[in-house]
Length: 134
Image (spheres, rainbow, N blue to C red):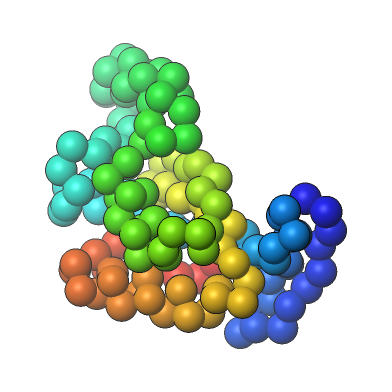
């Protein structure tokens, strides 16, 4: 990353310069329940203490798989919506009740691509599982 500056948007975001292009870092936040709703075959690691051993083993598998080892079908769907060349995927973060998928999104397309993702989330009926406060 070469430098950072701030852009005026509805929410102030820093711009990262990567390979000569401007990007804004964004976390798409999801409720864990999305895994039960759709994207069959994707896995969410719950933090249920009763299933600690099973979850630990699953967590180790996800970590070993790298940045594409968690909810890969969901990641691929979002990548399609953002459009090839408009983003850099940067992995995921798992929390107790939610998880985040991180992207650098081209700054000049940031607002329009977020709107596109919101429309997609409504079209596939997952908007109730996404949190847009970040």
